[in-house]
Structures are given as structure tokens and as C-alpha cells.
Image (cartoon, rainbow, N blue to C red):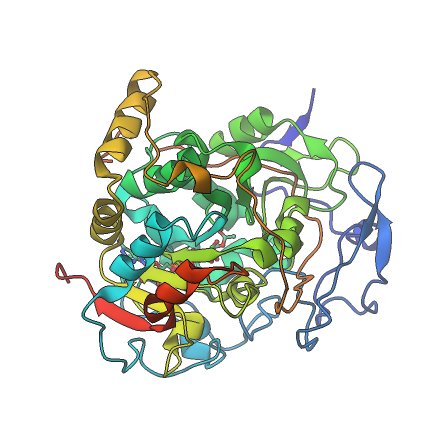
Amino acid sequence: MSKTRSSWDKRAPQGPALTRVTRSCIPQARHIEPPQPQDSGPGPHGTQQRKQTDSALPLAQDLSLMSVSGQDTSLPRKGRVFKGSSGPIQGGPSSSGSKPTQSSPSRPAVNPSPRGGLAAVSRLVKLGRCKNVVVVAGAGISTASGIPDFRTPGTGLYANLAKYNIPYPEAIFNIEYFSNDPRPFFSLAKELYPGSHRPNYIHYFIHMLHHKGLLLRMYTQNIDGLEKISGIPDEKLVEAHGSFATASCHLCYTPFPAQEAKSAIMSDEVPVCTFCQATVKPDIVFFGEDLPEKYFQHSKDFPKADLLIIMGTSLQIEPFASLVNTVRSTVPRLLLNRDAVGPFQKVPLRRGDYIELGDLLDTVRRFAEFLGWHSDIQDLMTSQETGTIPTLVSSVPVSNVPSGNGRGRGGPTQTKATGLGRRGASEPRGRLPPKSRPGARGPTNGSSEESDSETDSKSTVSSSPSN
Ligand code: OAD
């Protein structure tokens, strides 16, 4: 039987003998030992964990660890006290000046194309040019399920953490902060644990990509588990920031029964490692921790992608955010979001970049209509609720539907191979919630490539009429 401590007041022992040894952390003031060597010791299951570093990216800090872009979140920011709910995030990335690449406005000054990104990309899909679609997603895909995102001023999670009295919003997911005081996270975890929300149309749109044989992989930062609940199979899903489905010691990574961890946390008890007595936490990836092993499939997936769809993310968290820069330069990238983010803030847009700004639910619905998938998605949603399997008819020409897992040609890689992280949390599962509403011009050849060049060459931004 695993142990728990009886109240938040009792913390994990923090003596020097309990220095975290299996995953390295960003060098910081509190820890005077030098950075961990590449092989930093036995992993949670006795295996050596090897650091994979991206040689093509700057090494100012350890990019394998989760961090806010351009900022070392492991360091407490003295003098900044998070005030909470009113206005923009205090001490967050935007206010710290350490934002990603652009500090400028979020909407690029690009003339909207009359055709728009949705139409252009839909056309490529219908032509069978996108058979290895990679989806990169964040919290914006779950707001329609009633789950707040993180950084939207006012409504985002980070704007509503005042009651936890933490120095800055991301501290609640900071491994060093947790190590010293797990109470804020555990209090929040009681609200975040899966169980009360349902996937929405957007999740089912992604599932439909899989049904059509077009989804190479979905990379999500979400810890709500709605992707899995919507039926996207494990092998198509990378939960890059972990999930609540498994738990382990935050110090020695000894696995701990997830249900027991949940029960303890829900009862305001601290789950304690049976091996080292340190605090156990769900395997969601904290700032300063490594990403799950599965995340590293990106080095194979992104070079294969022939369409990248980015949905509902601010692209502020590394190493995840940099993934979008690792598709081939000829591959179309479609951003569906309320704001332009990451490389889509640059003017002019990269050739082949498309933006559709507005409410994601509306946008994805329109995308589905362009593709002729709307009723299929509705059937799929119904079937998930009733357990019946819908008969879905592919709208992609049969000859273009890939066999097996939908992988296609390998092809040349202009990607910067981002060896962005290394192993962290065990492979998880996510969060449930209450019933609610829910061409690439890849190295293809032939004349159709040429005939579509007009579409491919456009970089567009359009705004949803609903906005
Ligand atoms: P953010 O909150 O940073 O960004 C969400 C993005 O989605 C923003 O650009 C919003 O404008 C957009 N958005 C939200 N609702 C939308 C809607 N209905 N329609 C259109 N756009 C919408 O969330 P993430 O980028 O996912 O880490 O954050 C990344 C990571 O930061 C998270 O994984 C989390 C956090 O620290 C952990 O959970 C450990």
C-alpha cells in the first residue's frame, strides 16, 4: 500500500540526500551542483536517460526542459508577486519582456487573401496532397469544452491563481517550486483532474483526420485528456506535457498508482513515494522537467509532415513551440487561433503559411464544411456518445489514402532536427470534464503539383466573420 501524508503541511523531505538525480534541471540559484552530465543516472525504471539536445538550436539554456520561451522559469522572480485575476498576467512571459520572438502586435499586416487559408488548405487536402498531417494543439482547443486556457487575460488559468499566493503564475507548474511547496499545485490539481468535461467538435475534427487516414500525429500540450476521450488512438497522439493518467515520485520517479495519488490529492493528503518518501505527483510535465519519451517522435514525424495544423496555442512554451519550425520549408502551415502567434507574427508570412483568426470552434466548423466533413464529424460525435461506430466515407480519392498508419514519403529534410527534450513523465492520458457542448508541396512530382502552385504559393491571413 502506498503512503500518504495526512495534510498539506507535511512536505517531502528536502535534505541534500534527496537531490533529484534522474532528470537534469536548469541550473539555478538554490542548487549549487553543476549541471547534470548527459547520462544523469538511472531512470525511473532503472534505465539510463540520455539527453537529446538539438544541435541546431541555441543552447543558452537546456532546451530539453519545459520552459517559457526565452525565460528561465525555474528562477523565482524576486520582487514580483502575482496578483491574480485582473488584467494581464503579472510576471508572465509577456510582461517580463522575455516573450518569444516578437513583441509586436499579434495580427500580421498581411492582406487577407480573397480565398483564405481554409479554402486553400482544404483544396490541397481534397487533391490528396496532404496525407501526413501533423496537428499541434494547445489549450484553445478545449475552451469550447468549458476548460479555460492558460494565458488569455482575465479568463485564463494564470490570471486566476491569486488565491494560491504564488510568486508568478507558472510557479504552480514549476518543479522546484513544487518541491518546496506542493500545496498550490495540489489544490489546483483537484480542479484539473479529468472527469467532468467532454471533447468538443474540434477534438472530433482531429479524430476525423485520423478516420480519413490523414493524421500522421497529433502533438498536444493539453493535460485534459479530451483527445483520448474523443477516440484519437494512442499511437496517433503525443501528450507532450504529460497527463494525470499516471503518477510518480517527483524526485526519484518511482511510479506510484495513479488512482491512489488522485484519492490522496482529493482528500487533501500528500501522496508519498514508497522508495524515498518524497512527494508524488501526477505525471504532467512541470517547468524544469523533461518531456515524455514519446515526444521525441517529433524528429521523425515533422520531416514527414505534408501539412501542419496549429490550433489554439500561444506557442510560448519550449521546447514544444519550436516544433512548428521543424517541418520542411515547402510544407503548408495553417494556424487556427484567436491571435497570430509564434512565427505567424512575422511579416510577411512565410510562403505557404496560412492564418485563420477567430473563434476556433467556428473556424474548425467552417474548415470541416470546406472539406465536406461536417456531417461525418457530427456522426462521429454522436457515435462516441452512444458507442456506435459510424460508417465514414473518405472524401479523399482512394488512390491518395495512405495505407497503414498514413505515413507517406520520407523525402528531404530541411528541418532543424530538434532534439528538443528527453524523457520525463511516463506516458499518460488526460483529463475528462461535465457533459458540455460539446501541399504540401512535398516532394511530390507531376503536373498536379504545378497546377496547384498558385494555391501553394500564397501566404494568407483571414479573420473569422464571427469575430
Ligand atoms: P495558452 O493559454 O498559452 O494559449 C492558448 C491560445 O489559444 C491563445 O493564443 C488563445 O488566444 C487561443 N484560444 C483560446 N481559446 C480560443 C478560442 N475559443 N478560439 C480561438 N483561439 C483560442 O495555452 P497553451 O499554448 O496550450 O503547461 O499553453 C502551453 C502550456 O503552457 C500548457 O501546456 C501549460 C502552460 O503552462 C502545462 O500544463 C504544464
